[in-house]
Amino acid sequence: MTLALLLALVQAAPALPTDSIDGLPLSTLPRQELPTRGCAAYLFSTGQVRGLAAVATADPATLRIALDGSVRDLPRAAAAGTVALGLNAESIYRASEVTATVQLTIEPRPNLNNGAAVPSATLRLDRPGQDTLVVPLAGLVGCAPAAARPR
Image (cartoon, rainbow, N blue to C red; front, top):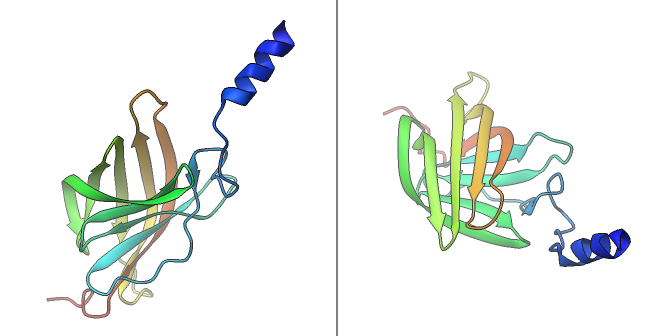
């Protein structure tokens, strides 16, 4: 009886993508280009599986993630906090039934041209009827050459 129940649960669980980040429905993104205008935060997972987990772009304000095996671009719905290189300290992105909240710390570094460091960030994914996911991240901000120049 117990074995039959366990087998039923395993069969009912959705299959995870082969490039899953730490057993989550979030996958690594393929290589991404620098933006043609503005800046983008390239955020990498910091757990057991290290890979590009999200790209937050300032112009247009979108978040790219790979969720449930497909790459999605979510438009920004709200933003708060300090702005650095066109990116807010907290941004909320929403499309259909996915809400993603990105919180990040951007630190300029003298050894980085056209960008900055992101020593810590989190990605929170909320979907109705599913567990909320919170993933720790870190990365870099890369900018189109004209976007990072002081004005």
